[in-house]
Length: 290
Image (cartoon, rainbow, N blue to C red):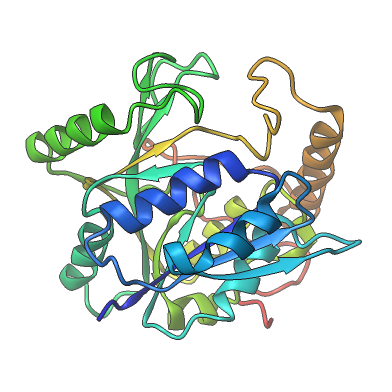
């Protein structure tokens, strides 16, 4: 019986969501893990697909139409409230997970049984941002595995990622987006995401800094691998990898200002490009009461 519940919150990401669900069910060690999908304000056929395929892929789904959207962080909070298992695993809708990625995350917790912590998979990502490298993420050419849902080479990625994990065995103090494994009690303790950052941007930095302020441990392991198509909801919702919708830039600007109001400045990062603890200056607590 699995200790993990997987949670995905999705907004108009149907083609990538299909791949994510397929990979979770086919590539996980615990293939019977509960899977919760939250779909908010979708207009791309996601709602209909969830209704028609929840039995085939064994997941529970929740469809919402909200005038004031929960967004990424609020969707995670919504899913987390439904979890009954010991662990929560948060996934993005534009992920494809590698073989046994889930049990490898769980294995890290055995090393630190009494530590509040969050554990993350090593990512592989197409070079859509013209990056050379990033700690915790392997940047590959656009056509290495495929930069879109329709040209992604599942077989090649699974073979390549298994070889990578066999050759490499390392842990770094890092997160890669809020897409990791955490004990439900530790998620509840910190209180989840701050809804002031809805619908998107900076909610992950805020969460991690609050966790650091409460002495959480962060581990990213090379033994668990995921492919991240990258920002298909937050920056490139129409799969146009060169143009970002203006409204998303405006949302990010607003959330950036809210972060500065909360902390007094933008965060600094360490040698692994991870956040350094930062005191909250507006009087709000590290632990949010949901």
